[in-house]
Image (tube, rainbow, N blue to C red; front, side):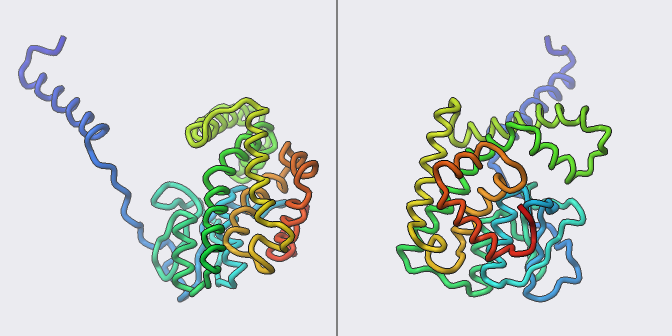
Length: 278
């Protein structure tokens, strides 16, 4: 029962009403853009905030790698900022700062960079196909690949190295990070594309990879002889899985999609000729 005191009852009802309003009726809003972290920025230099590099792959995050590949492909001047753990206004990475402006989300980053640096578009039909392939990679393939990433211990071991967990704590932290982070990632993936049995997941994976391979055809890259935005996205997602450690995706590519493996290697040689070893 509520307290018989009118003041207490009113207070309790008011608190309950506030939380109901906040959770149910209040229109969601986005945080304002923060001030630039880089105070002494250089004009027209992109400051890319991302996770720390790994030895065998530029980044565990496909979206961080996507932005960096885009910058390299179009000779956009940039600097990596990974010395301190900073987050975008969305609470995620990557984000960039350009002339003091905070820009989050890899899609918005690409659009902003295209406009600012006059990056040429492809012919209309190819541009539409490029956007479709990018959406396929970012919104669907990503949610398939992440399930293969989190199955073994290797992914979590690299995460612990990145955040500098002391070696003696690995036996304690590993099951915790698998339980908390792995469960959260799996849940978000199922909410995005649905839940599947293993053989169903592999069928869906094959369909995505075949779509990319069919678009590639006999070309060097997806839309000709130069790396474009779609290549940056596809490479980011697949490279962040097959290069840091071996998993089932490597087997699938080697067995059924060798042309895609050759394509990924061409991008690696073009964009990262001396940056990491495999």
